[in-house]
Length: 343
Length: 252
Ligand code: SF4
Ligand code: SF4
Ligand code: SF4
Ligand code: SF4
Ligand code: SF4
Image (cartoon, rainbow over all chains, first blue to last red; front, side, top):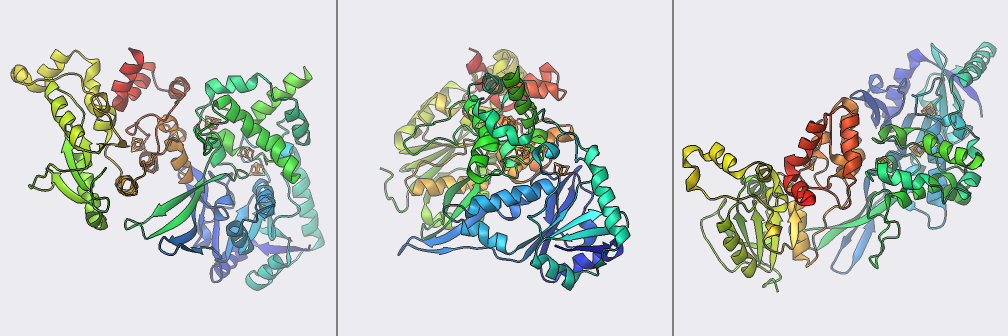
């Protein structure tokens, strides 16, 4: 849509105006790292962050959420929806792509109303990465270093101002209502183009092949010996899944009151790397070994999800690589598979 | 089988322990008074003087560290329909078992000095080494919410759920900065969750008080501890804080 400009001096007012109508969440410092959190003051917002421990997914699919409450007498239940208006501020392009994928996942087949209700009440303000977040990112290989959709507004830091790309009518209304802004002049458009073209060489392709070849590569990698090797190293700790912006598996549990009269059904994040994840009702566990579970994980990202939704299941954010204490990384695994296949 | 299903009689017992888990129970009762409507406590030395012997559920704190403990524990087992190990000492042997790796006579002299001969002792063991245990509430000390959860499950006639996944899962859900990334060390990847990752949340590494998950990859965990800077001796010492009994059993 259109391109607008916000002077940096007007940003604090923009955020405090938003606070009157929305819950605003954005990147905040957490020890030496960053985490998305509630913003109550513009100074808390760290738009210069590199990456966050957990992705902004947690505002659409929370770590734990109540799906419905129930009464055992009469077996009645009432669904719980979270529809508070919220702005997620400062989302990087890899995470924009991940949310775009989750939107498709939760709207396909049995529609997930809990996710979709939240999503409908959420606005996304993205921010362009001008330098790689750290040595683990491989967004360029996965085609997520820029985003043309999936945001309502998208900022690019031009020094003393932000260029704001308007992505949706809702974004346009937000800007008109809450931010002092002006149209982009010729020199500002030129500056934006320069920033965007100059950023590209700062990022490196970290896969030895194009990310779009992943489904084909995975198709010939089922029997690769690498899965056996990962068996020895992987701790089955689940961290790689839990920090991933595209993982969406959850476990459903009931919490019942002491008098057993009332309760709530909740869902919590789960992980396919955990030993008991694939145990089914009959007692059988169909992915007993860490090797099988690792293989499953990389097949999900590289083949099953793209086969199902037409988008890669990994956006190259590098969070799993940062979290893994035994250095199991998508770049390492996929390059090894590629090498084995082309050797 | 557990008598009055609506209001079962429960009792608390202690063996070698610091009584911290029982204190946590007393604490839980204060915040969950509804629990007192759901069960009848007939014996609890830590909290009351009356003593009933007709209990259906026995919560046992402490490890078994001398021959005379065994007969008492067996009597409890005979009476109770359900025996629950309460806390790390009863569940794992725990801290008390650290001494198992040292000559017992030295340990006894160190603790009791010239009165060493007055006291009987032998290597500390979890209560499951002596009697069948129906349920476990892990931790040093136990987690209040988990205690309540176990009681609820027992009242529903269910096997109390114990997380079979590691502390990292709860730690990541809380979005903690990993202790390893702050220069510390943590056993969280192979230790059973359920405590809400309380130690990493407070900035300390997990010391393993809830015991290992099923099928832990201990070799790889040891490699991680050394890779992040522990000496081999310190790495081995980490495993024995709460896990001496298990390590020695695995090695024997
Ligand atoms: S983070 Fe690493 S060690 Fe943990 S489950 Fe994932 S691959 Fe395995
Ligand atoms: S698999 Fe790893 S790099 Fe890919 S999206 Fe998930 S966390 Fe990011
Ligand atoms: S992975 Fe790429 S797009 Fe994502 S935060 Fe890092 S640099 Fe930005
Ligand atoms: S601090 Fe410990 S429990 Fe938390 S993620 Fe790191 S290793 Fe796992
Ligand atoms: S984090 Fe580890 S040591 Fe701390 S309470 Fe939990 S299991 Fe015990």
